[in-house]
Image: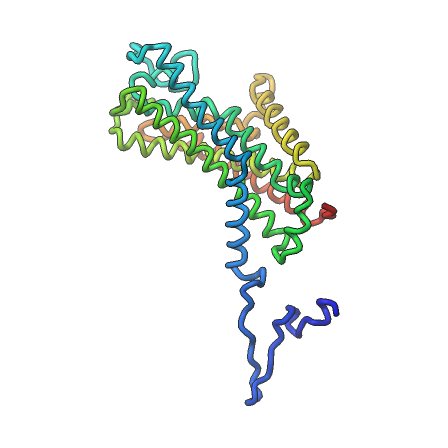
Amino acid sequence: MSQAETAGPTGTTGQSPRTSPTGTTEQRPHNPGNPRNPLWTLGILRSEITTTLRRHRTYALLAVLAAVPVLIGIAVRVETGGGGSGSGGGPAGGGGPAFLTQVTNNGLFLVFAALAATLPVFLPMAVGVVAGDAIAGEASGGTLRYLLVAPAGRTRLLLAKYASVLTFCLVATFVVAASALAVGALLFPVGEVTTISGTRISFGEGLVRAALTAAVVAASLVGFAALGLFVSTLTDSGIGAMAATVGLLITVQILDSIPQLSGIHPYLFPHYWMSFADVLREPVHWEELSKNFQLQGLYAAVFGSAAWARFTAKDITA
């Protein structure tokens, strides 16, 4: 007997109303397994986030990201012998990543230096691997059909996949920040923070600025995550989707570095990535940060919609 034959007048299997002895119509209790139940949606979301974060590949990516601040801190310590930089310049001085010259004076600056060093390449590449594998990896592994057999719905599954990628963005960024904070406090003195504007703020407020900076960096990857998810819906090869996503990242980074193409720079998703430095101004400058958020939201809307259109119309064969 088909599902349509067993469906009641309400159109939902096993959910037809019944008539009581008094002649009134009674509705049966709502089935907790119904995909329209919010608890079911939360279960899918929790499952996808847990699966993403517990993969061995995720552990390896997070370990590499956590190692970057360690290497930077050790290199600065060896280079300077732990002494002050002796430069009165701002945090952006020197030939290394932004804030690097201030690390020896205050270990908290290692957080900002590590985020500046990882944001252009390491963080987005890690996000590209996870986003590119979100749908294509399930297809290549033959598990996508089974995910859709459960009454989850393609839209809910896609949203859960995107939420898991965004969760990885947040976790990866704070892993870098936490590793940098631990190494900076271990190898260098910590105390009051000198902002880019030249004013001094307390160490506690500096910690708040560091946490806000990490959140801004994570938000800066929202658009690229949507782009990677879209690419993942175009192919059944997880490796191919990851390679294409990372390839797009490198290509756009190159375009953003060519002065002759300055006209298109404000529309490229990495153009405002380094605006997180404005968090360390007193007061915080929100102009570039706002442009960054708006651009990431635009990319998320456009490529999120494209991913939805592609995935909902896609013929799932694996």
